[in-house]
Length: 243
Image (cartoon, rainbow, N blue to C red):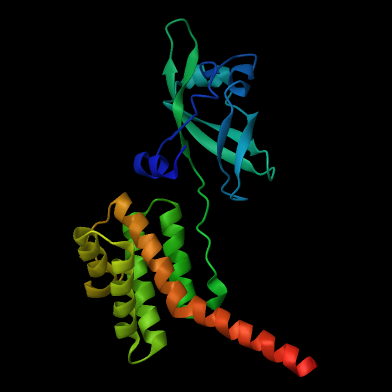
């Protein structure tokens, strides 16, 4: 299943090719759930892995209280960590309980980045921005991207803002970004108010994805590339000194 579907709906669908039986919560057996394996990107190890059911709600208690959703704990087959999923319920006239084929993930994988090359202030703001993105808080993500750009400009000195603007324009041309998308993202990271200000434009899921890649590219070009070149120079100098 594609990440695009997951982000846009907030729900994740059990793959049809794996779902051979209807997912049901039974009184004396978890076999109906075991027969419906789920594969996803583990929020702990970031590996796309099959999950194994290890803990299910008590059937009698569910029938007694009739919740609309329940949680099931799975085990990641790659790292062994628990993964918690939420399912909507349908109560059948015959007394059975059917789980929806769509589920909600409680913990999301975090976006990775080479943070060691970023200045401390920039790193702190960008890490927090990626945390917001990972939980689907896209307006918070946009606001913290704005803060990250402000921190970046401060770290780069007098010409910091000009460097950021130049990078944004170059990336727009390389990515062939739509004008509407560019206008919104440019307002967020360059022309908007302070990062915590409520007048920043709301951001859609699709634009959040574009903003994520844009921010990664900006951070890479302004800090990571330079840091890697400096590392290579140091390594070369160390090798020369050993001779």
